[in-house]
Amino acid sequence: MEYTVKSGDPEKQRSGCVVIGLFEGRKLAPAGKRLDEAAQGALAAFLRRGDIDGKSGQSLMLHNPPNLLCERLLFIGCGREKEFHEGRYRDAATLAARTLASAGASEAVSYLTELEVKGRDIAWNLRHAVECTEAALYKFDRMKSRKSDKKQSWRKLVLTVGKRSELAIGETAVHQGLAISAGMNLARDLGNLPGNVCTPAYLADQARELEHQYGVKTTVLEREDMEKLGMGALLSVARGSRQPPKLITIEYNGGKDEEPPVALVGKGLTFDAGGISIKPAAAMDEMKYDMCGGATVLGVLKACAELKLPINVVGVIPSSENLPDGDANKPGDIVTSMSGQTIEVLNTDAEGRLILCDALTYTERFNPVAVVDIATLTGACVIALGKHASGLLSNNDPLARELMNAGRYAWDRAWQLPLWDEYQKQLDSNFADMANIGGREGGTITAACFLARYAKKFKWAHLDIAGTAWLTGKAKGGTGRPVPLLTTWLIERSQDHRRS
Image (cartoon, rainbow, N blue to C red):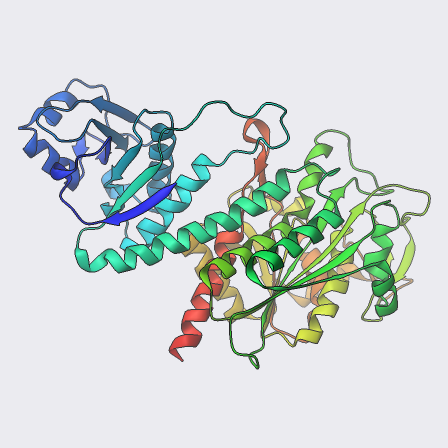
């Protein structure tokens, strides 16, 4: 899709389609009122017929509107004007994109971007218009023998701003939206690929592709390298698989050479059957999404490179499969992590924390200013927060607030849970330094407590994305979250650094 930012009167647009907002009660948004004046009241008369009321989720295409220069006029329902917030705006932008994709116009001009969203500016409106449009147009058909034959005629979207002085701001916002969308699409593609294609080696190849495209530095550690480093926790998970494990590192150096990087550590379990503690067969196919933390890291680094952010970022992805085998971890086994701490494996399906703990210890060598790990870690997080918010736990409250604020701006929200010492007692083991599970109570928190034992040397936050990284049911598929949250956080950090 080609995007253009433009300032212009709606009644002067010679376009295949002009998109305007309509609030509940058939109340036209400002651009619609101007069009109605130019049409000598024809739009208001048309609306009085009752074909559309303006409720959220409604849309209606009007062909050859009288006395106007555009060929079509698309009304998008926005709900009650007093209740119009970020979510309603994104719903409207998404609905517009889906409607335009099935219409005949090759080009459209959207005045939804000029709608007032409380607490947000024109830059937010334009960036999210791009993100919603790209998400609405996303398709994954690369594994199908017959691709979609239907060609999309819609190729250009003009996003409007109210003043010419906002054009430069709008161009920057569009650039950010496209970069974030590119990162999200990469993460979605990787998550949607089946486990027999997207293996640890495949993830490593994708990291090397980023090196080829953007000049980032990619390093891949093999099993022998990890054995020398003493990564007994990560390697214990890989013992049940015929796919060799990989520890993938990508270094994006957009800042000064001496500046410590931000580190992102993403769980890259390309398939998780649970090991000896095998999962139920129902919906086990969705365990191909257990690498969405690693996919997020790749997506965020792609976005950073597209934006040329003036910041140093290192991504670390421990990758393996977790399958039952004669050599796989058994309940009761004790393994030694890279840090030297011993772990009693009471449940082999709590494997994500085993590969992440060694990756966190490995990340110490980069002397990071902050570390965020991202993982589809616990079903308990899905029960607690559903699909709307990622779980956030941290040993540093200012870092947690930064991530929460970035999530709100990105509309890729997270919710902070406590990381109190009292929860640590649930990980006590009679035979090792700790157990890898803490019982049913507070499962998301005790999983983070486990990781916190390996994050004492830096400011650290943990994002549990088990409920947000993919959707189940009819709309099954990867979402690309939390690429927007983390990219927004890095944009803000780079801007703060530039101002200091």
